Image (cartoon, rainbow, N blue to C red; front, side):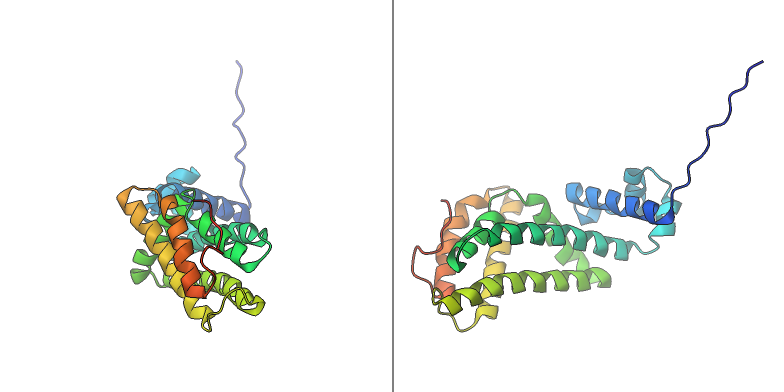
Length: 209
């Protein structure tokens, strides 16, 4: 009579298991938005029991905030690389507008829109949203301030202008998401509006029409 030995069960280190759960939640949010992050859905995506998710992530609010932060920070780093490749402030502003309105970041627009909505009832997420909004404003403000120092832009309120520009771009992206249309066609118009806000010469902020 032959016998089959039981397959040994591999126990993963706590840090590895926790990282896998966060990765599964991040993947799920990228595909379906923050509202998809329920205990059961994350467990199914990670291939573990719901109780294990609850063990490593006892607060779903904290997990949602962590996932939101990870996704947005990844986007910010990507946009920073795109912007840094331009030689001067007007070019950097154009690169910012173009990359944020090229239609390739729709899944991040969903994350942003849901982040704003869900933050009303999720304090950790609210803190994360405010922190990332400030990070975006700092990025745009630095471009505008550089342009002012170089004499390319003439606004005396780079912080306020940065906020207006972000609101304009976010609003158009959110509108296009809801309407199922393409934001790319508004990039040139946004660049012309940005020129007026920063006090630049008309046509000096380059974007591909």
